Image (cartoon, rainbow, N blue to C red):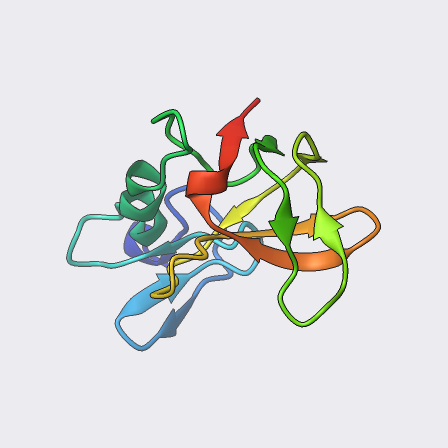
Length: 117
């Protein structure tokens, strides 16, 4: 394979094309050939900021800054809850952080209710 087919992040040759993007199954990196290998998630990571204006990235740890009611359940995520290993998502409803919260499970959070650790 030529270099355009290798992952620009981990240099893996096991990449595949998904619509207009190339994807690497080993590191989950996605990129477009037209943008020269720049990540599709780079622009997302640069735009997601916490309540204090700090840029968030995949794998960061965050702290919830206020009590949040869980929609459809009687549980509450308490302010001060630490969440590790977040993933940034591109959601139109504002819930742009996907994570697992201990004792509750998989959850989507809005970045305006968290702060970076």
